[in-house]
Length: 330
Image (cartoon, rainbow, N blue to C red; front, top):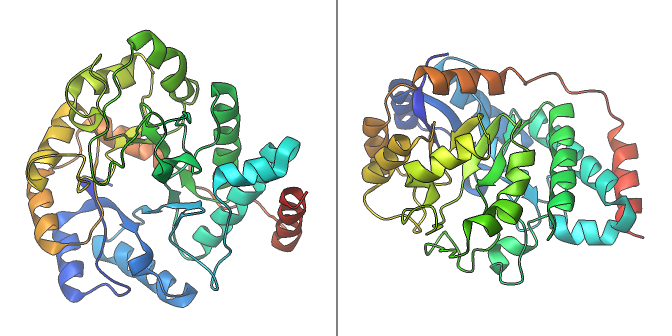
């Protein structure tokens, strides 16, 4: 489906007539949901249906349902999950199996309400200085562990009919400030970055969707990776990631300039899609005016990603839940 180069959020639990008209005109590639959009299963399924109806096709609907702090669908309506790193530590030698089960269960919950893209796994390598906002969301401090847990996460999602988004390309683990508020800068050698920070993403470059990191690597460029043509070229050529690349939220304070300026800069740098999360109408109008139709290469990447959508494999949810609980309870 030919679309424009943007993913939008919406304001509340119900799609307003104004939003519906705007989305029909703006023709975004997809939508993203947050806690403000979620009350219960019935309401959420109605909202995802209405979002798709507004654009007239089976558009992808995204969410950040990592578990732990970053979990938009919460108890009592849905399961609560430990932060990923905490679960891995609790599961010990069974961490891989527990990671698969966790994400297969998450996928089941998402698919049930019409959400078919989850913004995970995280391939960021943890460092002693990693900011607390990120630390226990990650999967480990060595490349092999991170890659293995990402693979189990992806397998769980795909088996549950949900597409993964690899983040945060090309690596966010060394960030010592919160990118929602400030711009992280990591001043280390290119060799060190390639051996550790970038390495998981290179091994996972077959994943069909990815999300940028709002972070500066001075050895590559003085601009954040999201708006840096040099960083995007490195991601495409050196890391070898040829999947669909969306920005992290373009509204985050790590970036400077107007919303329109940020959107243009990210597309000019080589991102395929601008992600705008707030649902603020004035901002969405500004972004929509800047984000035209997806170029052929971006559209081909989008089509390849959506081609992975499938009917979930059969699973005994009660048995999987009991097994996960047993694995993490010791």
